[in-house]
Image 1: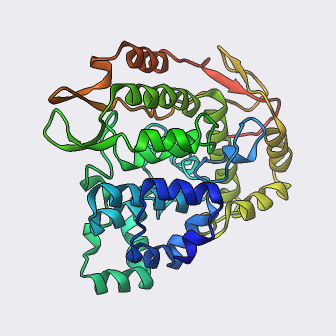
Image 2: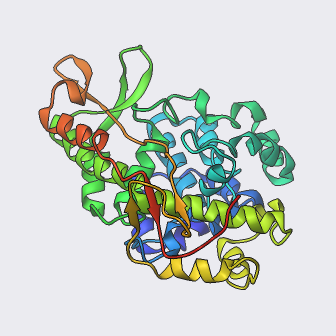
Length: 352
């Protein structure tokens, strides 16, 4: 339990909201070296490091994974599902989804997940614990098989719920407080969706509307020009340095983000350090309808992250947009949100 005792007060209380009970077995898996590596990676895909973003709270991939596991434990009390949630981002490299952008996976953002089984199987500490607990690796290496852990957009599951709660707490933008999170979370229960599959849903329409309102604001941040530009910017810098053998793929999994940023800031190849400094200190991204010559100008799509949760309505469970005009308007505002096709800064990072 030492890990939880050493958390800052905000995260300690947040985790307690997600699960008043912290199972002992979870701590043992958290303390393995393979999991601890995730503590040096931010969930913000590089956005934490620029003045373009108003980020109030450092939040690691490890903390996100633990929070997902706690949500699953709270609603299922199932060890295998809980561990699948804990391991779901164990293959995440530095700068998270920026590497998906480097791999050309803009819209699904799942290109690194194929390494999950390998990383678990290569960890003698995790494998020893799994063997002790009589758990097969295939029962915890793919959280997609558990609908409470993960499901398809726009449904609500532990992963999607967690990053919405924490991102609104200040990880992406401060949009609600712990009291709001507690009110929302305590209104959630396991329901059956239109396909007869278990899904997290709301008991009360007013609380569901509150959740959707903030979720929609976050959904627009995820596809803003600032976010898309940053993810492509990191992807191109890492790719250029990788091609010049200045960064290895192993570095992305072994080094902290700050250690890699130190390499970037000292890189004298092709104007990289100067470009990084301009991006780091920028406060506004410029947009345009056509490409801008002689500037690092990007035009990419990004994964649309949104949720249309179930809500209890008399004796049935219905998607919130079917019974709430307020929620429908918030969701439609997200769907109608568009940036200009091209975004740029006054820097000239050359890319192929």
